[in-house]
Amino acid sequence: MYKCRLTYDEWKCMISKNRIGKQVDIPTMKGYLGLLTITSVSDKQIWKYNDKDVVVCDNGYHWLTIMPSDEFYCITVMMDDNYKIKVCYIDMIDSQGYDDDKVPYFYDLYLDLVVYPNGDIIVDDMDELQEALKTGEITEMQYDRALKTAQELQNGLLSDIEKFQDYVSEMLNILESC
Image 1 (cartoon, rainbow, N blue to C red):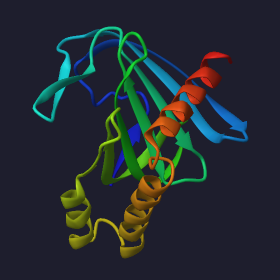
Image 2 (image 1 turned 45 degrees about the vertical axis):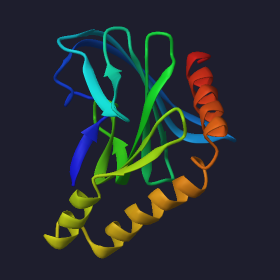
Image 3 (image 1 turned 90 degrees about the vertical axis):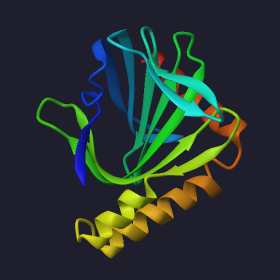
């Protein structure tokens, strides 16, 4: 497991960026909402999907972070400069918190869901999750929680792509209105 700070510093292509974020406690969300605006990149980042290029990181792009406090996942919604969703990347996590500098973080449990605007969901890094269990880096309980969380997301929040996109819009509006 490794610690991920929600400054996305591991994305070395980002030359400059601005981050806003806050804790919210409303009926539809209790936890952290953040928005990273990427002002400058050294190289745009492109993922392949269905033989097409999907730009996920470029000048002017926005990444919305949704991390409910009582759940075991963190959603990163990668949007273009017009806030159009390009892809959603959902990390299954073990725990979360805040560093002394008030930047939120989570401990990554390797397993991810990649959600495309058409509703397609790809389960990613299952091999890393299995390897972490095999080597003793994570426990059977953590392994099972990652699988259960991914399944619950697919059967719940992600089961209707239009409702999920409405939820993302609501979270973005909440953050921008504060």
